[in-house]
Image (tube, rainbow, N blue to C red; front, side, top):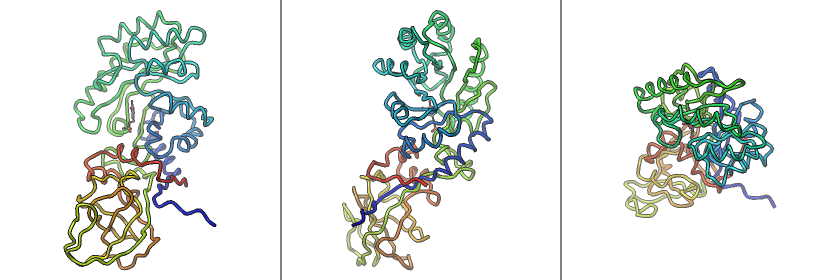
Length: 361
Ligand SMILES: *Cc1c(COP(=O)(O)O)cnc(C)c1O
């Protein structure tokens, strides 16, 4: 007996990940903190971390202590960096394991100072230059630096900030770069390596800083550009696939799927074995969504159901049960699909569910 293959799977092209990392390095001319939060944007935290662990990066960016612990348990040597404020209950583990937090408040500073009494905790300072999601405001910087001088339990190894509109508002983002650069220039740099970072994917593609030496791309590493203009330089890492289970002939006037979308012609349909239970957004229903089968784009028919979708293959010369379909990937960009679904590629990628087998190439 052989084990049945999955109905829906995601092919993860690890050489594309390496290509995109090189684009991030070439474009920025800076060191890279690879952002792998959210299970490496749905690509699989452990496998992606294992590939990136060979790249000699200073940090892997994760969301919380749980993701950092998964890296530790997988034997990953690259240091986890916790993006964003830490919970009080996470800090003992963060300090003990030598993961790098970014200090977002005086409360965090005090706590990490306590926890670092025997071995100082290496930490970065988070500045809020416009994101409003934690970090010291420009007018608090002086006080924060002051506090650090009397915090022997903390070793400051960097400073960072975050961009809320790098792909939407270049005037604001330029002013943010200017503000960040001037703040950083006012900070006395401790001896040794000092990491200065501001850019996400959109920031590193579109803007230049006088002071930074590190960038924090996420989406770009997975081969999707936040701005269409840079897409051709990148290689999408994930291809979401499924297979035809059955081909049917339905007459004009027959209904399709929940809600009964009525067929306007005699239609050859193919059923694919994936749905919103796999993370294929239900909001793609009725939006002119297409899937690729045997080299031909075929329209989605009716509503996306939990485990199956129905596509119109009337104009496809040949298709059979077992044939593969691409839902998104190199030929159908997940960013275009996300727009149709009324969301963003970050959300579509991170919502591909565990039922979808990740296959690494
Ligand atoms: C998620 C995140 C990033 C990566 O953003 P992308 O737009 O995916 O490149 C960078 N920095 C911080 C603080 C983040 O939270």
